[in-house]
Length: 361
Ligand SMILES: *Cc1c(COP(=O)(O)O)cnc(C)c1O
Image (tube, helix red, strand yellow):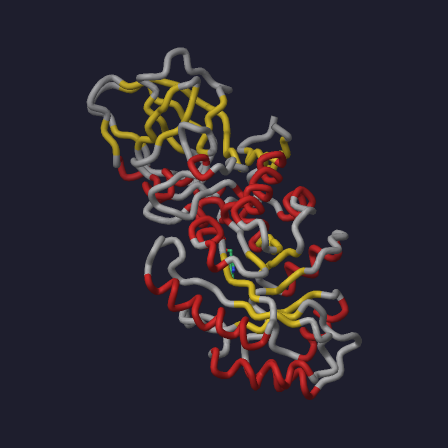
């Protein structure tokens, strides 16, 4: 068997999409599958989430890939495109680049696309100051876009929260207000809520919700796990023990000798490292799940391997399965805190060397 493996639970994916619809029963769902579906493998995820109303990715290349692989749902390009050639490609592949710059609007007025863009979204900067035009500029922009021959008249308003993971933070209301006002003034569909807002801010759901992380069974909140929110973790990352041996008290383990055995210690070596995307920031910090026990990682994470203290794990032997995250005892949210990052990053950076294996458990 090949290892390491990221086992992707398709049943959990479908469950999590159903959970989105429970949270936001009156909204259409645009499932965010950018960055290879947050590292989970975009084709398997897109097929499992076929009940989504639309998909969103970041870039043109991601959208083209999905079309070439036969995905037919509307596909939004969250970063938009900036050249005539890229607009033409988007039109050819029936992709929907978000419009977030005045220069994009000008370009659309001056070129002739092979067919009009459909399922269009104008990005409004409601306060995050990343992408979008201001709410005040929206009416004039809409006027132009509505009469532009390169777009069908299907156009909605999009925005993005900067702080929706902070439940009750007043900045969320400050971002929602202008979107509600535009919604009331124009009657156009609004798409605003990411995962945290889907779960914690029903007033923001409006016409379309746009979740990513929660589809993968991961919590966007620091103080709650996916399962506590009724989500099922989709990825289980696992590998094998490739060596087991004993060292004496006082001996050091790994590069730099960053860990010293205080007692005689049974060391296990598992085949995974930062070359697989297992964060080096977990050096000396994380634990793994092995034979129904937790075993601490000792020393630095290497490119291909990690070392484990097996003193509390009986009978461990070469070939044993080692779970890095995605078991109930080792949620990826917990490891992200240890690595001082967010679970988004841990799952997204898993490299191609890790085989994706589909399961229906
Ligand atoms: C990534 C992204 C999302 C999804 O956010 P989650 O927190 O993963 O739910 C939604 N909208 C935009 C614009 C994004 O970039």
